[in-house]
Image 1 (tube, helix red, strand yellow):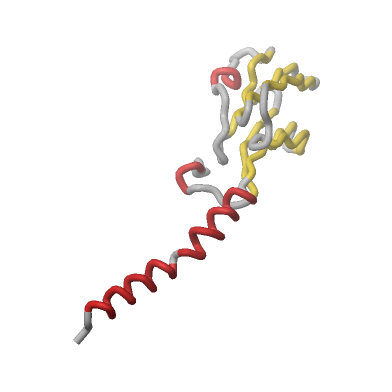
Image 2: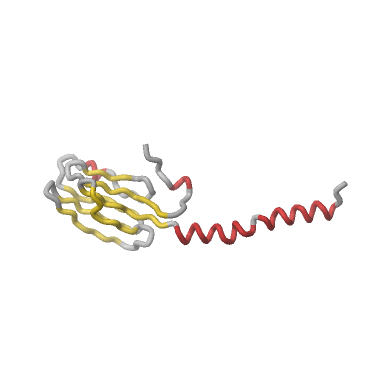
Amino acid sequence: MLKKWDIILIALLICLSFLPELLIGSKQTEQYSTTYAEITLNGRLYKTVPLSSHHGITEFTITTEQGINVVEIKDAAIAIIDADCPDHICINMGFIEKPGQIIVCLPHKLMIEVKTNGTTNKDDIIPAF
């Protein structure tokens, strides 16, 4: 038969077994999880922009033979805010910030994709199709 103190000791040991995960696991997730945006032109990497460490607003212009795109980074999100392409679908996409989200400007052969290096929450990742 189990006595009262046996049950208390077992419950205490079970609770203590989760202590390393709570202390070490949460620090590792915060430390190594960073998001960044990869900007590619004609299938080649043009620029990598860190998003998780960015604060404020930054704008830059990408000029190619096909046209001009103005990219804005606002805190941890990125968007194309102006383009001289005829359809403006890339502008209508708005700001993206979750890993897996993509903005594409087909007439200018420009793609912006948010990626992560490290561990993230399962709910934060947009699955690829």
